[in-house]
Image (cartoon, rainbow, N blue to C red; front, side, top):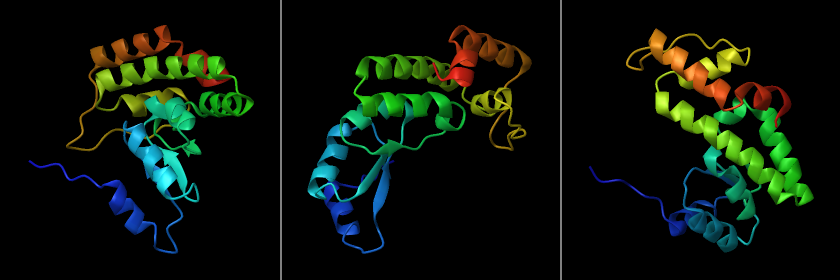
Length: 160
C-alpha cells in the first residue's frame, strides 16, 4: 500500500482559493507545518492536530490546536495556551507532559478508551459499534487505574 502525501506545494495551490482561510495540520512534522506558515506569509490560520504536539506546534507558529483529548481536558489545554501567551514555557511543558502521560495510556488501550475517559468526565457517548471493539472488564479496570495514577482527575478538574 502506498501512502499518499500532500506536499507543501499542494497546500499552496489549495490556499489560492478565496474561501480557504486555514487548516488543521495533523502531523508530527512541525518543520513542514512551519514551511506552510512561512510560504503563506502567515496569513493562513494553522491549527495543530495531534494533542501530543500541542505545545511544540504553538512554539513553531500554530495559532491553536484541535484534538480529541481536548474534549476531555479543555481546562488543561486552555491553561497551557494562556501560559504560552504569557511566555511561561516551563508551566506549558509541565501541562504537556501530564497530558502526554494520559494520552500514552489511552493509546495503549485503544478501542474505546477515549469514550471511557469522556464518560468519566461526565459525558456518556455510548458504546462502540462494530467493527470497533469495547474494552473488557479487566482492560477497563487497568485503564482506570492507569488514568488515576497519571493524575487524570486533577488534570480534568483543575487543568493542572
